[in-house]
Image 1 (tube, rainbow, N blue to C red):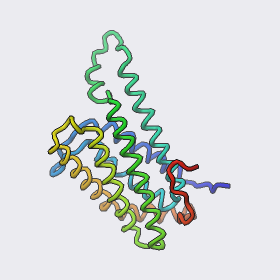
Image 2 (image 1 turned 180 degrees about the vertical axis):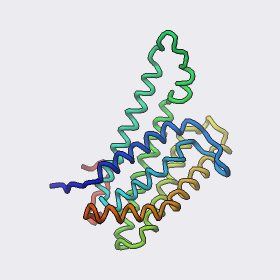
Image 3 (image 1 turned 60 degrees about the vertical axis):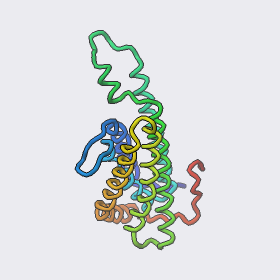
Image 4 (image 1 turned 90 degrees about the horizontal axis):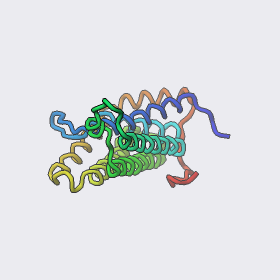
Length: 222
């Protein structure tokens, strides 16, 4: 019988919300001081922080369910945006160009987003879970930052290359990858004290501190 948790549902909702909002915001490329990246980068790093919290407290198996929930939610959102964009506009509604510019996702962008998200999040959760065993639950900061360094690297490279290779100049592609990676990792580091507080709170309230000793890490396993 699976254990019932009080806060798992709420954290899952925040995780998926961050993912969906980030996907929409990513349609704009922004200049943010020293960094140049898609707008979704401002919020997307929080999904890795939520992923760290989920894995640290509830374990890989529960986190895997939430990652897949986010995946299929993002897929459904993308399909709806594309279908609605292809439907005939009502008489007098003259905003099709604006809709296409912001929400008119192409299959290439959808594929890039979903592939990068899945590979990055599963890598992040896997590494954190393994590091927790290796460190015997010590040095949470090393686990959260270490897993994010790998997960965000995979995510940034896959998304930028799949989405924009051959469309944007190579110099801009490299700038986007580096800016995305540095900024996302920096957010993880900055939020480490908050992550500690949330993790400690949940472990006490949920009476859970899961170790993935005998876990099957296959993302497709039941």
